[in-house]
Length: 246
Length: 119
Image (tube, rainbow over all chains, first blue to last red; front, side):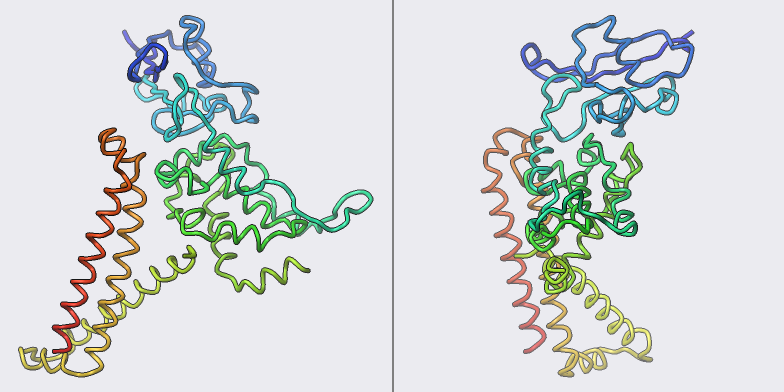
């Protein structure tokens, strides 16, 4: 009897009306074909216009619709319903650890503050060449697996260290980007970047539990990048300064 | 304090503790007849006393880093707020009391150990 119905449990919270957040259950007809979780939310929204969530590109590029789907963070637009359904049930919550603005919409200020902290831009004060700063193919290869991050925050919000210290621990997403610039042969602020990360919290709060790797919708490995940053921090400081000069 | 110093301290102290476990296990498993006298003779040697003193200093240091990490993760306004809003308002005080208690415990523990070993 219930096989053709989907039971959706959705986190609801409107601070203007609700004292506390609550889980609201919706029952809808099971779609005839496999759809994405975002499509499911769109179907729900047709019936209940008050449901709030972020979405934009609907193809896993913008990173807007990161949410907790049946206990695991992911992008709703590229998560097929069939891959997450458990006994025709699905539970949707906002990304954990960040303040909820409304329903599935979270306040990402702390996440972006950490991203800003790592100075996510190339720093090179030498005179710019006429056309572009060239890299060898080998140096360019070092950026693969780093530049693809779309800042959806799925990784950082699955990390307990980020939950507890979002103001001090940089978090996997921003650390992946920190390493993206540390590994870039064109960037000349390596020692300064490392100095900024050398306190006991920024990098060292990562205990390598690999939740970030488990949830990354782009299949990236922030844990490996963090390991590389730690290796660089442990290197002789003189070597790093020498590499900056060269 | 640099994060790398804490990182290295925790790992090298763990390695030293492993060495001590091997050192003591070697005595326990390869000594034929362990009596009170062989055991006390073992600990009368300067080498065993020095190593044991160093190890307990290392143990306290290792535990301090671990407990400090736990305190700065779980005894903060954000995490205590899960239990009660009133507790979260006093998070700094609670965390400092926690630090004081385990620091005091570590010092007392180490003093007793050194006293027992060297007297």
